[in-house]
Picture (cartoon, one colour):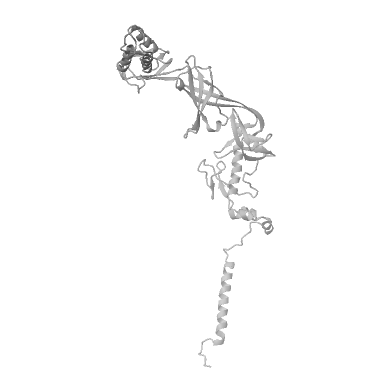
Length: 437
């Protein structure tokens, strides 16, 4: 074995000393942080016994960081203190309560209820009268409108009506028409008569007479031609019915054709009233129902009519259904395009659950009321509403007869319940699943 050089570690002691140095370094690195004066022992947030007694869900909820919310706008939630961007109120720190529910029950002290002015009412069964109150527009009855066309082209030598809106009666003379075709038909009619005014051939005579009728010549004019035995250069154009002129498309000397109406006449003895009904009101609407109207022009006066027709489609923009009503107008007091206040009656609806209108909370997504459970405890419940009459609303689902509901101050209670429900929705998914196992 070779001699060791002076000052060097002996081979048999080198590995032992190296291990000793490494162990000393590791021990020193572990002890130095513990001995540092800046580090303090961490205090547990709850005792070991309390932590063991909590379920996984309760333990997770208890250690969630607080959220800061607006008391008036529960949808405003922040991780840090601040003010509400909507109303400017200071955000309030809230923690999720372990016993919160999707629509949690809210408990309010008696003095707070008095300060809030909370009032309650019972859910009762009553009789509601079905009716729709809306506005309508008076219009002409299109089944009582007449359009006068010449049966042959020619010239209006004379027009005896002067303006739209003029009243006319049935058979009244509207104008004189000169038509070469009608004049030729008169000649054929006279040829069918012998010199003594008797028909040479009955078939030929009737054919000539019918031709004049088809060209719009009146029976009185045909008899006059037959009696005089001579033609007329012009034939009269008469009104087929009484009413008012709604369109006058001819003047003296104008050339007219069968394709164009020269006069339109509307009979105002009966009128239409067109109304728009909202989509949620059409479930019991049907033809034959009674209706009344009143117009600003005649205060205190009403007209009675019926629902004549319900149109098959809704307006895609306003989501309303057009309904046509008919009203007798013997005095012609109702004028076209008048606005009218309309009531359509549907009869009584008996033994229905009703609540006051002010008890309903409308959010745009649901309808709800706040049910009073007694002992200062309140719970918001969703409801399905039906018809509305005056200050009452029909309830189709969600409540039972005798339930007590809040009719004043319910918005603050519902806001508090929504706030607690919002915290419940903040619960992490893994925490919820752990609590359900």
